[in-house]
Length: 408
Image 1 (cartoon, rainbow, N blue to C red):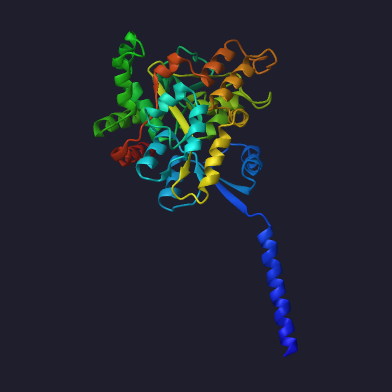
Image 2 (image 1 turned 60 degrees about the vertical axis):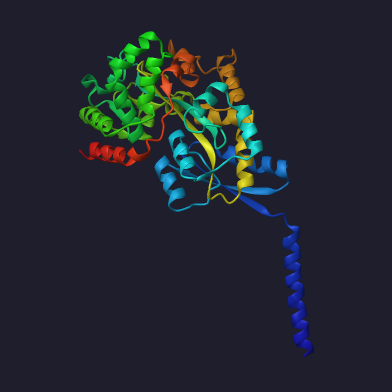
């Protein structure tokens, strides 16, 4: 009996010791981040751990995962109800997820921080497109959609690629890259099909009501007839292509210094910036980027908080952290795209143009001017650009169209 009592006391004391040790150990929180591939450095997202500790006194571990398309991310949230805390969808997908109740509003403090960090011009674009009150999202990176080409390739210069029709030019058969993206392909096809009307309207200025109305009709809605027009245009283009791609062509154009393989294509400005801004052995300064004169897309990738977030408080803090000017500067430097944080953007531009910068030391003539315009689009360029809206009931019709084009 005494032996049993002694064993019981030993077990009880061990249990209490474990409980006491656990109670005295600070609880370690988890933040789950879901982002595009190669879109944030490890130093940035792990750096949040010490920043959060300083702000709250609590420990946290960031679990970081990557996706490759908006649609694959959407499936994880909408169908699988994955409990990621913060996500980084693109503009039209943010609009869609808001309308379907898949996102939570940022808290009041985070909204204040975001709205204080973002420039008025970018805020105006966002409010007019997908987040009317800037209460769901923080613009992480933004840029334009355009044509990138190799200046060493015969027959290519800014004038030749100043129109979207360059991507339908049979002179470049087998050398053209096209994005494997239904929305980007559709948009470019419709800009090309409406080129004459857009150029005529632009004679009265890109800010004219006529031009803005016509441009907006391409980006804010579609129907069966327009989808059929785009399909026929893309089928016309297909025999001319080197191939469809999402990420591989930027590496091809980086390594193919003289442009002997594919030498022009549809690219996001972030991809162009990524391969132009590197070390001496990891940059191709023969490349050029231009936004065609008919108009184009301003894209925005923004951080949001998922409906199924398990740590909403930390998610809000993470978005505030990304609004810090130094953090945003480092993100811009890593990604090669333009941050949504105005102070960081201005600081980055000033450093590029400073006497101490060696970015353009060995660059060909005109490269610096092109690069600055690509990274920091002028007011004139932004006037002929719009943010893509969600096409709602026509999303499935667009997907079917693109599948028909791809397998034809």
